[in-house]
Image 1 (cartoon, one colour):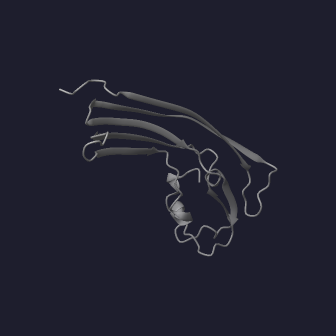
Image 2: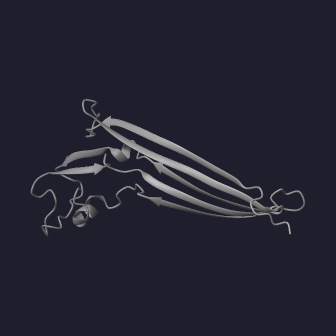
Image 3: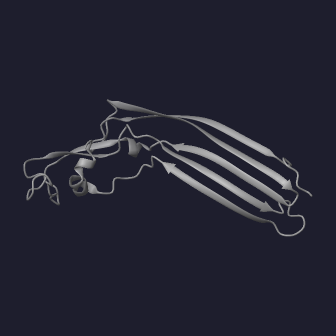
Length: 175
């Protein structure tokens, strides 16, 4: 038999340490932001990629890898915007006061945009593959690969708008 355990075994490992420091104006109100008060946010991550390749027979190659990654938030995702709403173009119903709108009793402060407390997105990829005739010397080369990507703490825009937020305000107490 041509089967040899450990033939052509290759292992790879790469480790990387990232450190991102973002400085931005703390006050992003409408108009030009001021550099008088700056916020500093630091995100750090250690990520890795590991892989292996094995040729148990001259006509078969097995391969696999695992990789992790992190993506720090953008400036837009970090910076919040605060404004006073007095006369909205479309009145928003106030769910705690049926029959009334949010500005009927006076203006309110609208906080929108990002948050400097937001964490990095994180992801992991697992890949497995089989290659028949890896050298391709006599006949076609055929490969089958499988990949799975898992993402955690994904940063997405808030989809509900002011009216949706008011209707679900108990779910978002900090907003």
